[in-house]
Image 1: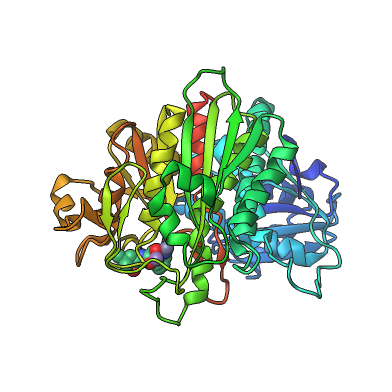
Image 2: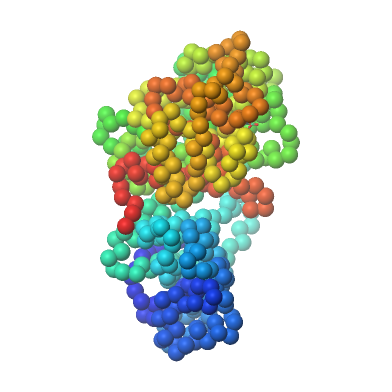
Length: 501
Ligand code: BES
Ligand code: MN
Ligand code: ZN
């Protein structure tokens, strides 16, 4: 999709379709009013006759409106003017795009970006419009043999801003929105790819494809043999039951001065989590192909920041691995020595994410990081706690937690902090090893974070549990591309780039 911003009046547009809002009950937005005047009351007449009430998401497509230069006018219900909030705005944008795609208009000029959204500015409205549009139009058809596409799909949208003064901020919002959407698409594509194709090596190859495009991006990897030399025995144990070799992919974006401490992102990349010897139940097990959602999110965020060429150093780690039952698989009862030297008693081979991450988190000490954020579909307990709307954030450093929560609010990619209090550490004590990989009954998301916290004492660190947010199941199943928007926002902020009017 091609996007642009413009500042013009509706009656002067010569487009396949112009999109204007109508509030409930039957109240024209100022833009719709301008069209109404030019068309000698054509629109208000229709509303009076009851063709459109203005409820959020209602659509009325008009052809050949008198005195209007555009071929079509799409009236979009925006609900009650005072109640138009972020969520409704995004829903309206999404419904409009679906409608436009069906109408046969290949381009459109949208005035919806001029709507007043509580507490949000033009930058936000344009950027969210771009992201919501790309998200709505996303499909994963790579493995379908018949790709039945639309005959006349929407190709170009112009977003209108109310004054010329807002054009430059609108342009920046477009640029950022496109970069975030591109990163989200990368995350979705790799996450939706089935586990017989998407294995740890595939993750590495996707990183290499990006590195071939962007000069500042460099990729290297650590294979099993090298992990043995590094004594990453915990990571290695998880992959031992799989014929797909464990591979840790390292992506380095060198946008800042050499010597500047990098921000490090670490993604859990379980390309399939069967549970191992502690095998999962069959129902829904296919969804465990998404257990590499953390790595997908890191890959996507690396794509976004490469596209924006942020002037800071950033390292992205994709901790690729597959957890399978096998004669060679690790077992409950095994005691592993992690790269940090600490020992772990395995009580459940399905609590594998923390075993992979702990070694990756020790590995990244070599970068002397400014800070480290890991992202993981780590616990079912996180889904119980927060459902599918918010990711969980944990941190050993309050300012970092606040920065991440702020980035989440700015980007609309919701996250909520959970505690990492020492009281919870008792739950992972083991009589035989330094700790166990199982926290027992309560607070499963927190005890998993507590486990990781024992490997991150040397730097400022945050952990994001995205078990509930990385994908959706059911008939509209698929990766969400989260938390690419929030990670990207966090990094944009870190680079000192303004994202407000
Ligand atoms: N990848 C799963 C977590 C998960 C489960 C994410 C369902 C999303 C939906 C993780 O490896 C896992 O299996 N965790 C176990 C931990 C338990 C054995 C302590 C869980 O949550 O049940
Ligand atoms: Mn598991
Ligand atoms: Zn897992």
